[in-house]
Image (tube, rainbow, N blue to C red; front, top):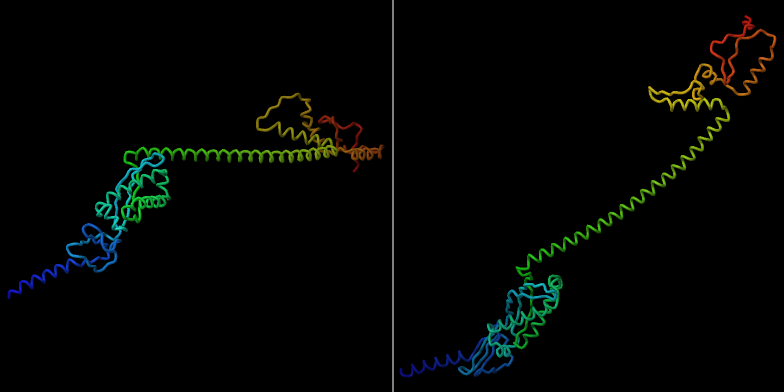
Length: 344
């Protein structure tokens, strides 16, 4: 019975030693085995998951994350090369690649976050300060994020960590500059609109001038052709008039007088004051009006004279139609006294 407590004590000691002699590395972790504060065992750390051994009470184990960890940079005000201040909200992803160097530099993840945030902010100011604000807001932002990642990665190697990626979550103007920026943008758009309107007005004037020139050319060409046609028509008319005048001068003069009457006596109350013997009224009167419609060619006159001379001693025939003459016989003139009626 006296040996039972001793046996129980030995079992407890063995269990305690056994428990403190082993450690388990999870697949989400990596570990360092320390002996009096110095790294022993695997100098690169225990990264593979499994069961490992240590010396109890002499050696201890520290664990670090083997997963990708977040780094929130927060809002940062940067000044691009065109002096247009911007507020940048960025974040990064990092992981521990050298646990020994990481322990020597920062000792823990909590101590690493401020160091990494300062490195990230410095890289943001360096890269974004070397370009214009338009470049930051354009499609070239992905190239800028790559440059920021490379710069941050190079500066964080001495911490035993690797920057996996850097992203710009948001890029805005400072609140106090938004109104001024909106006004400047509005002024630029108004200037562009005025330029567009000016160019449109210039093009419209050019088109109108071209259309006016073409219209003048068309009208001039049409007028020239009309004058040519009118001249040809006048020539043809004069030729017809000349031919008609050559055939019967008396009828042509009568026709021209009728045209003059038609033009001069238009309307219902036209009045013309002329002397009775005016040439304008040479065809007014019974004798002149009837004589105008009698043929007056030389052949007809000669035929009538020949017919009258064939019977000089015969009784006077009925009065023949008066020959056309410029001085007609007075109206109501009696026949010669020696005339006799025709025989039955």
